[in-house]
Length: 243
Ligand code: FES
Image: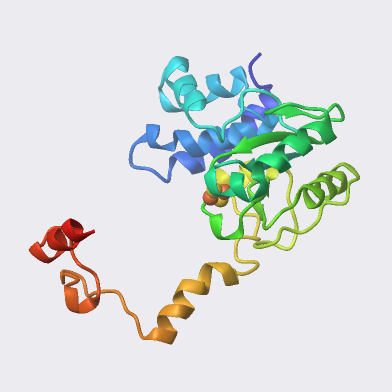
């Protein structure tokens, strides 16, 4: 079923703004998909049709993009999308255990919504936060250094209508639909909140300062005097042969 006239009128204004950001209309597809996802919480057939119309694409072309990127959902998502990182580092640090216990605690499988419609659980790939492993996300905001019990407390609070603040980033969580609007390029004013990098991310920098280490200048090659044998040099090959 297509969007109602009211919804279309509202979306048209925002779609025009999004499309105007790009020299080629079709480049606007990704943010436009987030915009229609913000409408219903997932990309519906109406959303696909709308994007195709706006960008002079076929619905097959739009659907191909939707099914390629995991951030676009084809089924209803709760107010809170709860992601558990089960990529290698998080998995061995407890991510697999967290995911298994959450599935049991919530009575849902992967990519399924709880009966009350409050949250959807999904195992996610590395979120570039391995230094805080195991990590979870709620509507893509970070919850660092989780344990099975902390994870259960987190989802219980979400279901009780008492969402906790993320570990890093903004001081409060928004809903899944609001997060989709932000990804469409309509800021909610929270992007500048919180720390840019947590202490664990800065350990390497602190060590480098302590030891006076610095990155080689652009165009220069790290030589043996820098303590690193380049495998492309004779010194590097020799070092490899000796090992
Ligand atoms: S493996 Fe989980 S954030 Fe990288």
